[in-house]
Length: 186
Image 1 (tube, helix red, strand yellow):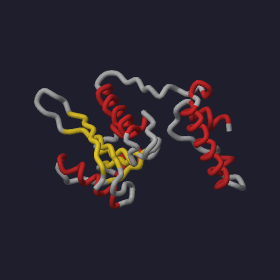
Image 2 (cartoon, one colour; image 1 turned 180 degrees about the vertical axis):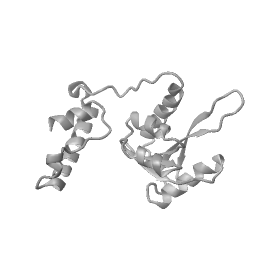
Image 3 (spheres, one colour; image 1 turned 180 degrees about the horizontal axis):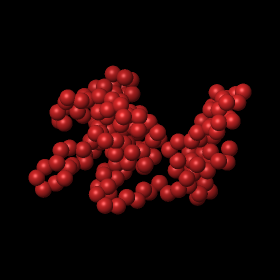
Image 4 (cartoon, one colour; image 1 turned 60 degrees about the vertical axis):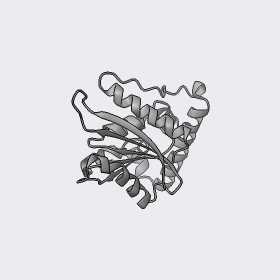
């Protein structure tokens, strides 16, 4: 119990069972109990961070990643303020959903990525649900297609608030734009 709790307080995105526990007589019950410990530790960390001695939720990034992190932090803050049903991220390499996850939103991150490889890499991050798709669409078509696909799979419903984060192509004088949009699903 203490190992799992401390892993959550340290900011771990994932925990796993030991070989002995996974092969034991009650693996399903063990996973259920581990999930209860995780949920309890996360709630206690939010309610009493001074007692839980949690790792700071303030992520520090330097260099060019600071711009990405700033927008992702703003997206998590906007999602919290609006009680968003999801943060939808359109990504090519998986960097943006990782940054969003680092800020620990309390809603799912639906990450649309171009390849199964990127999708598999994103599965380990807290709250990230990768979906392979949106290939062949122009950049300006991807946000609407992502929202429609999220609606089609039941991740969002009509009337839900969402936040969308994506990178736009580079333009003369700028490397690329990281943008955040907020909307209500209609």
